[in-house]
Image (cartoon, rainbow, N blue to C red; front, side, top):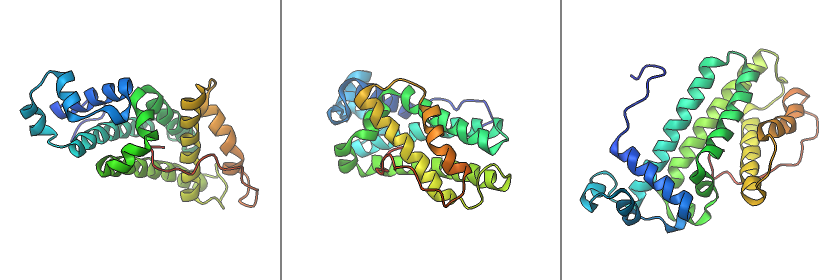
Length: 214
């Protein structure tokens, strides 16, 4: 078991995943293959085959690296924010920071063709999404018990709504290079939904495409 705050040693597969993410940031998702990664890293095909023998293995390694980074960030929030409301907001900030801090990630989230072609990547990103949703549901449920959020709230539905808001922001940044504080904007959109009664009319949904990490 790894102690809190101590980083796991980087593996060769991690280095392959990082090189892949750099290529995705430069070229886009549809123009990256195992051969490209081999050339970029200056390694042999045999070395690549030992760690990522197929493109599915390559994208699984990428998804695993992303998931590990995100889980570390989520765990840090959980350890540092005893208040459910503050934890929820911090989870929003951390997730948005991770998405914007990894240039290739938005390309992966928005690549319909890659999602369609790579079952491995889709499965990996769905696992990340479910992990994030679990953290949100936990914070929402604890917030209800503490009287911070309305009792009638459906934590599962609300977690989906939060992830839809993040997904909408990802699309907006990609299309418009939008400025401003995305965490504050999402929080304002969700505030009434979190604190008012369940009978209050819901705001217009932002996006219902749940393929990504949000």
